Length: 316
Image 1: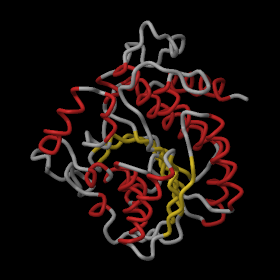
Image 2 (image 1 turned 30 degrees about the vertical axis):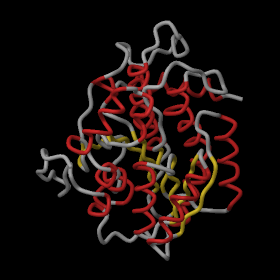
Image 3 (image 1 turned 135 degrees about the vertical axis):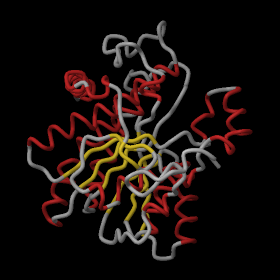
């Protein structure tokens, strides 16, 4: 467990707060949330805690078997939990479209969309749609998913008169490890200049810019839906599995210097459920408090350009 940064911020929570602590006494009954990447790590813990608070959780997972194991563990602990599993491979635009169509046809409402799934530090490879895999999985799949489900969330908001929330799980890596120009529009698929860390940072910057531009569009439309991004903290999860010797170091020493999964899921659950955040949109959160971003993450022109670029990539 981390031994520093324990002081509470303005929210009343801190770096070391857990997901259960930041949602204590919050009633999520009647709400429905989609959580991507819910079969492990902070996605699984986010699903568990939301279910604990009465939220109907749709676990959007690529690995159905792993998802079933997580669901069984949640239901065993929380007998009243409402948890469903649906298959989703965010690296495939066809899979994203099928998931969205299936969800809409299910008749479920949608109050929260938690874009959590991601890959980090993988060698250069292309998705099924011939897009660099980290950009495809971490940003583009979530971008398309959000667009396809937005009308359903708008409908739910109108019917229930309850604010909808979209949460993009980003990373502080957006400013530590990314290409100088931020988003390499002309070199997304360039294997010669590819760097796994920088490509990850690029995708995480895209998460922030996506929420920023989406907020602008939602406000223009007068829609009662918020869109925010966050850094969950550095957590000892299987996301490091592609990083060779670094993965070994994380496994051995991570518990002493990084957050555990319960702490790692806290900011996501805070932004998704806490009443303190009503009406707050286009912001970036860290350690269960409002965070600050670098200028590139607030670049309106870059955010709009990314939106247009992404729309072109997902066009059928």
